[in-house]
Image (cartoon, rainbow, N blue to C red; front, side):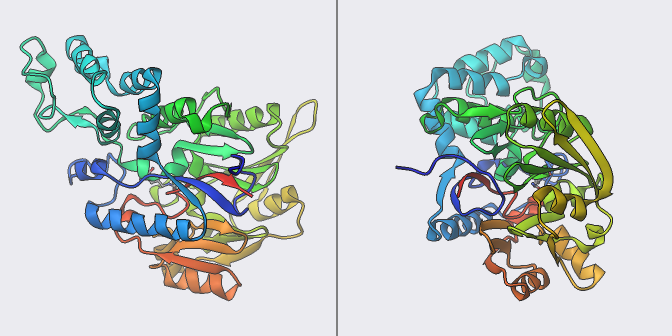
Length: 399
Ligand SMILES: NC(=O)NCCC[C@H](N)C(=O)O
């Protein structure tokens, strides 16, 4: 029997994970669009795929079942006509394309093979690639450049952490904050709705009332969640998520952590991830200044405490005396460089065993000196989207 699908912590032994092998969507990046598409450079795609294959292989070698997003998406599109309709509706935008072209394109996409549709939904489509003949009736088509996107590509699908996350036995489809990523959630939504593997899985945070991204959500311990609020997750998103998990009995405490609204710290998991049941790797520049509001569900209502130092609030919520903190670097320049290169963004495979980018030499050495086993992966190309092993993984089953 396969492992039940549920995740109660950051560090319980990882059994099943959702990754996305970077594909043609990365080939869409140019110096003209990379900022808007949230990449800091233009990755060498073949090498990024090799790096990602090695990451997936490392996980498999540790007995982790790896689900690849393109595979499960294609399977969902194969078994369900409703999935195809949903995916197409989210991708084909009549406001941008005008009704004649949108209708023609949607009708065409309903006829293509699931694998082809899966590629279009992830890699997007340009006007030059429109399969339907030159349309005299679409002004939009005539006025666009051939290289413009009819359907925007989704290069950040690579970061599966952000577009869905699990709390206990439920999955939350997130509400992504930035235009370049909003449509990602339509794909995770249809995968979890229609793929047979996820039949019967219930949802958390169904209201989607305000932005919440998975990189901001840390399952500190069963029933205790930390939520970063900054460039992506908003105060309203954190509050709505907290009330929703309280109502559903998925957590009793939510620690809400304001983080700086800038690219280097776009999510809480860019400055802090858990490496053991009582230990975090953390950017030293924020370790002493991060604060937190603690929301508790007392049965008849929600209380809010704070703000107080994050490390104290987290330890108190977890019911432990102290969280061990491992720094990203000795001196502030190394720490800043390694934080930027996702040194803090580790993926735990078990308590005290993490996957980390090899380039963060100092951070990895400090983790090992603290007794953490570090499994190194290359990330020179993967990292150009500013995300590390945690960002690139959505755990679906942990012990
Ligand atoms: N959890 C994470 O920090 N994910 C990394 C997301 C990187 C992506 N390029 C973004 O800007 O959203």
